[in-house]
Image (cartoon, rainbow, N blue to C red):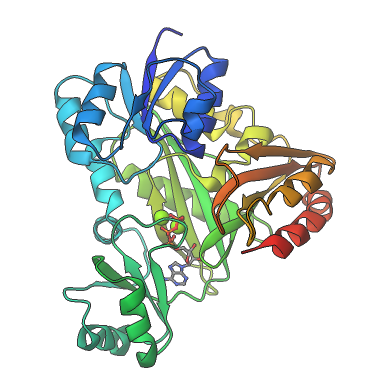
Length: 382
Ligand code: ATP
Ligand code: MG
Ligand code: MG
């Protein structure tokens, strides 16, 4: 392949994208800090050191590549629109990135497109009076959310009662916020959607398990949901993604309500933690699919079908520095496990350091093999 792809961001998603690019001999150039995870495994001198929010760095990256994509949505979308207008294709579209990076604007867009989302309200001042009024409107608990720069739950605060409003204000001080009605979901699902130049494809719906708002486990396919629910999840995800322009992977996070109804929680315009299992379980991973979609290469739909059920367990930084390595040791000794480490050093509490994917002929076999690893993960948890 003689194409060069530029990526804003060089974290673990960029690193796994680079693994896919390397296999196809596609040159991947990352914009991020020196020695970022994606740069560690791509030995060439063309990477750009800097911030994916810095206009000059983005322009420098654009001038060195054939096409631009992102592995994080918290980028300067205005400059991306400018480099696109100047001739460098950007996927997904800068307008899509701009909409999605503001979770309040994203929700307004989805609601206007007829996609079911949790009830939500915008906030003006984040004052005690306003937050108490929201409590009267949505009931307690409700979820206070940062509009921007949110990831791994680090922009969320559950407001349990009027008394906890000051703690919420302190936790999210200085950030533009909005509020959502609490969703007592049965479980959380996610669908990885691939938008190509001609098609919208999906991987099967998976079940995601979060602890403290951060993804812990992914079951692929989702356990204990009917065929009808799985089909409805895929259809809703496709419809939601079709409302955004641009090619590549989109991850759609869903809440399955006790009523059986599905709500869209949020959309990520890039490869996503809920799709890591595709690396081992499918002929084409979400990273392979993203590259092919962005570069307009063939993407046979049947290549997205899993060969075996899979479970993914995140390796999170533990309470003590390096504590997560106990989980790595246990996973290395466990049959059917693939271990991924992201090259992030000794780790800080709760940080995503790597992940483990286990595939087996049946979900019950996979669960039995994974159970001791979940136990180790719980022991080292921050
Ligand atoms: P990500 O790392 O997926 O980008 P994020 O920081 O953007 O996460 P959300 O996806 O908004 O955060 O929320 C994280 C988790 O918090 C959800 O997966 C869910 O478990 C819980 N959560 C979010 N919104 C609600 C809600 N309205 N009601 C109940 N739980 C919620
Ligand atoms: Mg998010
Ligand atoms: Mg989320």
